[in-house]
Image (cartoon, rainbow over all chains, first blue to last red):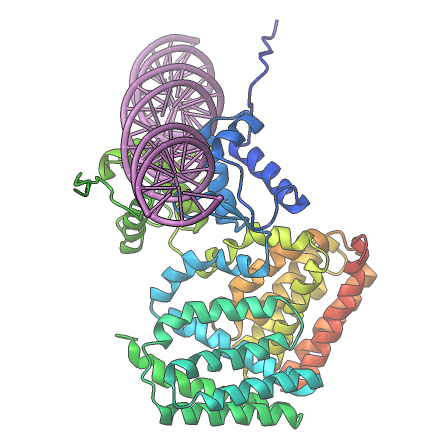
Length: 242
Length: 242
DNA sequence: GTAAGAAATATGGTCAGACCAAACCTTTCA
DNA sequence: TGAAAGGTTTGGTCTGACCATATTTCTTAC
């Protein structure tokens, strides 16, 4: 006679116990049972709710955090975060940090940004709406006004480029922009700055704006490429070899 | 008299103990002390090495895994993975899964892909090297040969597009392609397929190839947009509302 | 009555030791 | 020699405890 183990097999096969908890909490978050921005229940409560040990609960919460569904500060109740495109990009922060330290890492990322942004301005020249162009103009004016103040200029610089990412009305792009600026900022801030440099950069921004307003995709793309490649020359000085 | 606690405070303030372990293991990986593809030391060994409890070690390993520096299968020793661009994209898998379930999520991702790939073919038409074009031709031929077999056709379809992402010689692009195909595949496979449809898709691929070979960026971009937008019409049928 | 300060409690972080089941290694035997 | 049997390692889970800080409650002094 074959021996069949008929034990209830508490948690038999392929899953980690934490995965089940993760799934349940996930669905509670997306269903709205756990309010966005509100605290997660205390670990001890979750133990009761799901009938597992604290070990498992803590592992589940850690997983949730790594997926961006929850934001946990040291010794504070984790905060529930409805998943968004920003969170998706932020999830890559850890690895990208290492990538940036590899030879050519920064250049790969920056080239990708140039590539993307060049396409963005081309499409903007072809299809930007009036209010997009107005928003770009406002950002440009703010950029000009900030020329004497390098710190403020950097902010308006980023804001100007951000408008470009808003034009396609696809939430993926602003998230990508946010991620890129975050990743590249450490190198960017080391770049030497001065009102004269700021003025040059402002003029490049104006070139881009004018080309978009004039519906000239080739000029827009050329202006952006010229602008960002020139900036690269200033940034590359902040590296050691290669 | 004010009471100041002068205890040595074993692990004083702001860090999780696991973070220190994470940092040390990270540097061991990038320094090559832990061979890429090899197993991580057993948890019990790491306990001794770092002088912390198993709780902390396990949390550290989980963090490493979420950052893509380590790959852990259930009940197997974690495998060390030197960080790469693929890992960076894979880190976003969890959140993107939720994004795809939101209304318009798939479309946002797919539109991003179209946008990127259109720019890719435009640039390819302008600057692809001879061997790039040859590789594209080979992928196209394989695609044609697979027309009768829908399963194989899908593979050669993906491979053809993959060549496009290789052309800029920037490792970010292949990683992005891999991520996109992974995220969109679940919907893609539900798309109805047939040799007739395959033939139409092959002809679109041929259009793209011809335009690139003929150095006609506008035609290349138009062909790709037409191809992918048409595909979208077939895919959208696999959704409920919106 | 109220606001500053003190005590009590709640909660996340860490630790220690134990048990299980599956993976891994060693030995044995046909 | 090769496959089965047994023991050992190792990841996954549990329990229960302790610490330090965050939060809440309760005094207390003005």
